[in-house]
Image (cartoon, rainbow, N blue to C red; front, top):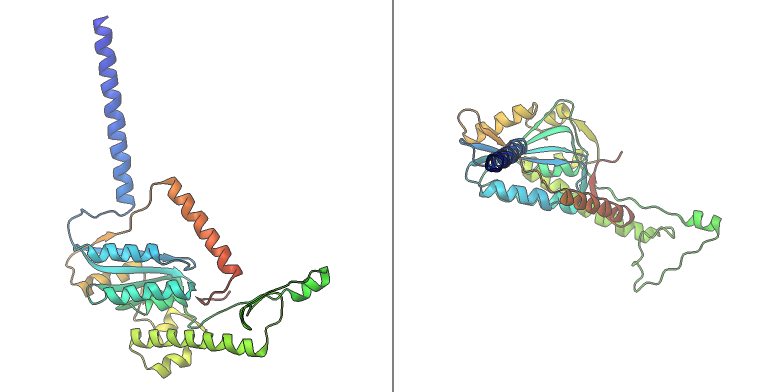
Length: 294
C-alpha cells in the first residue's frame, strides 16, 4: 500500500513537471515567434506593420510609443502594405511619426502596395525603400456617394427627411445633389487634398508645385516614384532593415523586434467584429479617403 502511494506521488510529480515544461516551451516559442525580443542583447530595430485598409490608428500609434520608450530600439521600420484608407487615421499616424523622428530614425519598407494614405504615412519617414514593382503614389482624395432615388421611385418608396439646415442632408442617397452642394463638397475635398500635397512636399523636401503636378491620383511603380523623388531607394524588406541599421549607427546584425501578438481568442474575436462594424458604418456614412480606388 505504501509503495503504491509513493508510486502515485511520483507519477503526479512527473505529470506536473511535464505540464510545466510543456507550457514553458509553448510560451517560449510564441514569444520568439511574436518577435518579443525585448530582452535580447544588442541594438534593436522595431517593426511596425501597416496592412490593409487603414481604418484605425490606435494600435499602430501604441506600438510606435512602445518602441519610442524602449532605449534598446535604435530605429523604427514601418512595413507598409496598404492601399490607404481614412484621412483621419492616416494623418494621426503621420503626425506620430513626425514626433518620433527627432528621437529615432524611421525607415519605410513598401510591400506590394503603399498608395494614397499608405504613402501619406511613408512621406513622414527619414527614408523610403520600395520594390521596383511596388504600387504607390495615388496622391489624392476620394469621396463616394450613392443615389438610389430612381430605384425608390420604381418600387414605390419615398424617403422623407426632416432637417435643421439647408445642407444637413448633403449627400443623401434619397435625392440628387444640387450644384451648390457639389461645390461645397468639392471645396472640402480640395482642402484635404492640399493638406496631402503639403505633407508630401514637407516630408520629401520637394517643391510644392512639383508635388502638385503629380498629385492627380495617378498610381506609380516604385521605380517611377524613385525617379520623381517620392522614393529614396529600391529594395526589399532586408534592404530597408540594412538602411535603418546604417542610419541608426548600429554595428553588426541588429535584433528585429516585431510587436507582440495577442494570445486571447476573445480579444481577436472582438477586434475582428469591431473592425467589421466600423467598416460597415464607414461605407454607409461620410468619409474622406486617402485610398487607392479599384
